[in-house]
Length: 284
Figure 1: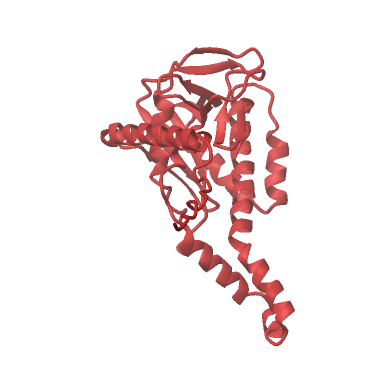
Figure 2 (figure 1 turned 180 degrees about the vertical axis):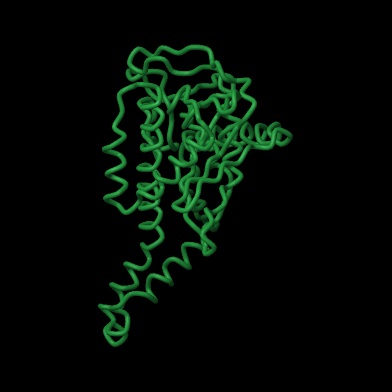
């Protein structure tokens, strides 16, 4: 996950402030979407079992409880380790994509450095496929990594890119994805539509983080909301279906209310209080 200047990790998830000198006051788009229930129990179980089965120390540990316990403990962390590694990879790919935009805009960039970092991790194929997509779609960047704010609903976020493609303004969210057994990039989660429509419904965009200067959101009428799945074998752009946007916006607003309700409940005080037994009655 990228780290915009005004984003903060809090006890209530990622939140945004209005300037560098202010405290965070609204949740991020991803924090709001994270209120939706989802279970990864099956995936966590599979990752742990798979890690244990592939541990070369397993056979020699079967007769040694201490060694076996070590293998089991490390296997239990396999899913979290995979998740963290995937997040770090996503950050590297997102940073590279941002540098491509900055270079195209004639602004200072670290494109070569970021490309080298991907290569050092064996991830240069992500950059190569992204470059192919960028050229094929003739992307004209307008605003990379732009922070937006909606004061009516109460949220903020950072869009990966606002660009013009074929003369039409597009709000774009990148998703770094793995590759399936057929060599195809894996599907994006439909939650990306909520992210994009929340960006579309922004009211302001950040001008200066230090001063806390904002301006009216200039792209609230963007006709195309695009999720771009970036893989090692291909890049697959998908457009959000305009007909479903109202429903996904209503869902996002409901999740925003859920976030606030959960925060209020957490701040209300101790949910459980001790209770003493009733006084013993005395006989006559």
